[in-house]
Image (cartoon, rainbow, N blue to C red; front, side, top):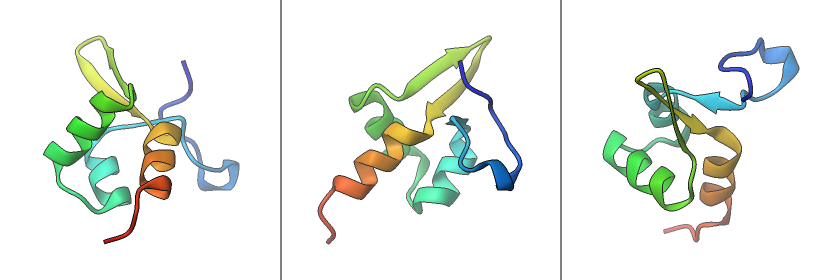
Length: 66
């Protein structure tokens, strides 16, 4: 599994937490959870839930703008 946090000079993180996803994609927690479940981006590790940043980013980049 990838790293949780990386310094900014190394690029985007592999996995992020729910609060980081809400801030990054500008949507509510429920929306992030539903989208992550649909695109198989949710990972549970020792009771903590992490989201695959690349899968979520790809989803939001390819979704039509409103």
